[in-house]
Length: 176
Image (cartoon, rainbow, N blue to C red; front, side):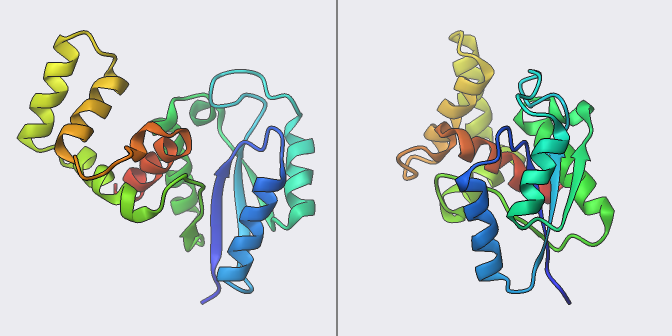
């Protein structure tokens, strides 16, 4: 079976790191096809994209993508969890994507325990989360504190890094 790798992306702008991701995919899965699910005119933060979708799609195709599809705005402007959930859901429903590729500052070994805990919170996690919220922490900060309390051996905390935050959301979306 041919590998078809999905990438949920913005490419605003497309840069060398994105090209490197394509190279790594091709090195690890020779002959793989790459399908990009890219945000349209608005990005994850709800801001207008700097470059038109056609310009960004062309850059991805010229760098080696085989197909670029548009991530609906209902997902592209959302926070990380719904951005990831929408993208993974669409790629899954296509019925032909076999792999998901995404960037992260840390490897899966550092991220999987946190993703599992977020998916199935223990009583200790729930109590640490509640305590942090009562102290006035934002939900994101409280969640980080609860993860740190329950996964103390995981240092530095991978859930505090921007690409890891989105990677955790992808991992959780894949489990649903």
